[in-house]
Amino acid sequence: MRQFSILLVFVVAFGGAAVLYEQESRKVKGVLSQITDLQAKLGDMQAEINRLNAELEAVKIAERRRPNLNSIASRVLHNEPAAPAPKPAQNPQRRGLVAGDVTSAAPAIRARGEQAEDGEWAKPSVDAEAYEAQAAQEAPVADPYQ
Image (cartoon, rainbow, N blue to C red; front, side, top):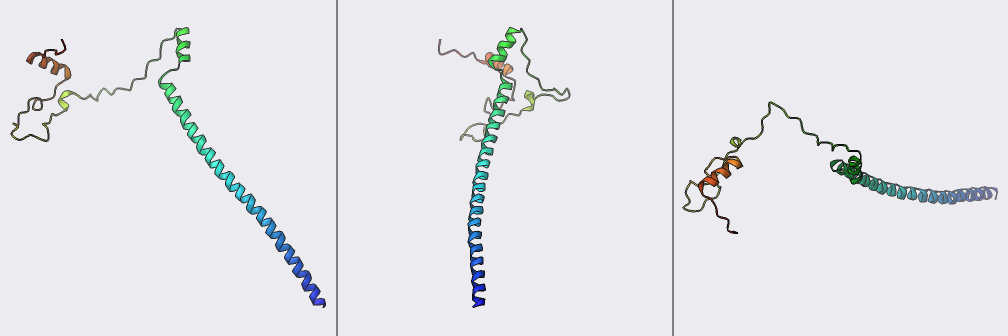
């Protein structure tokens, strides 16, 4: 009988401990799920903050490109000259693209019986001003709207 009572005490003690452990683990699981939800919300908020920061940077860059009305008005009131746009540095050794650098090419697809001499395509490339001068000398075009 004495062993039965000791066994009963152990069963009641371990059973109570198991019930308390289950209750506490449920509380911990609830807290962990709340933490997970809050981390997800924090991630969403961080993404929104990053999006808004990117928008703000875009607006700042746009404002730098074109002045707003307040800066124009203050410049007019104080008679300040407009700031010139910064020019890129020119390398004196580097030369620009000239008309001779561009080669002309005939059309890739030719009609049957078309000759190799294609008029405009066969001519070497020239500057626009020189082309307009050549075109004016060759044949003046009448304006159909007059």
